[in-house]
Image 1: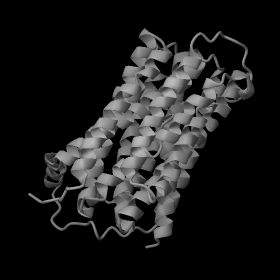
Image 2 (image 1 turned 45 degrees about the vertical axis):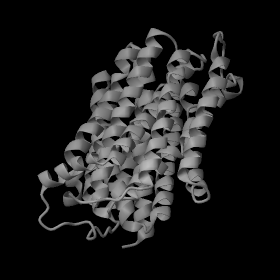
Image 3 (image 1 turned 180 degrees about the vertical axis):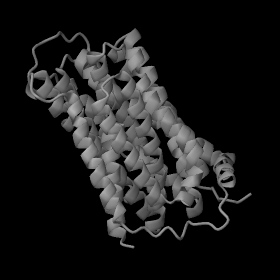
Image 4 (image 1 turned 60 degrees about the horizontal axis):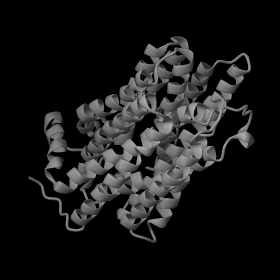
Length: 413
């Protein structure tokens, strides 16, 4: 087994799924514009994505080791390839819902498998945390690329060109096929986590049994709050740019690539910084920085008048400053996930990853629906100010979590 090729395969899988999973904000903007869907109704797309992640992680996470990490990821790539092609051929809001449900199911399989694979090919907490940060960084590079790919087709459509924004899905289907072929030709030795006498019900109950530890409870609360914060901003930033900053749709989408790029830099940089400083010190600084940025930038967006904006250079300053919150948010999720996985036995990491994915998905749905509701009832500024509350709650939860982690010892029941 070549660890380098396994890492390459994981990176490409996360790159592709990053584009697809985080296109929900772009698609929300498009269905509002093309299908005259309200903001509150459009926010349901996040629920189709995240609830399918949560449901299938809950049902399938404990079975992934038996089915195989590599097989699970290959099956997921087949599903997302079919979903992207379906989106191109069956245009409509209903197909958007079905596509994101399929993406959510596939992401659940890929993330559980990939996170567990990291435990197989790394040694020690530092190497584990570093690879997790790089993996999540590549995920965000995929997100960044997605904004430009979609933005390219949206711009051509807006100028009366031959392409529709839906033609983006030809490109995405092609990337899925490439990812499938690379993974298919990669050898992965899963013997260290294979169990004799594997029983799906037993493994499922084993996953739920992890919640008996107070440390695990504090962790899943922390993961819930973090994803609530990230998704509330990331999902609604294209709409914020279009309806608060009055940017054209193509620029509204493309400029969100700054957020994705900032998160990618934050995650990759965080993998290096955490080797020098404690993860708790880094995460505390990140949350404080995020709160300060929101308080400084949102006032710059108040009372902006509609104007003719034809390019990036004529966009208001807030359009460039607000996405920089990604630099602060970036390091949090991979460091937090690694902090719990690295204190558990390798044969428990698949079950723990299932819990991570479940509560992350619930947090994403909650954040998107609340932000979309506030956006529709009040305005974009109120919706984005809301993110400060879960930031404060996350910081408080992390303080208790870190204290418990220092004395945690895993014991079988």
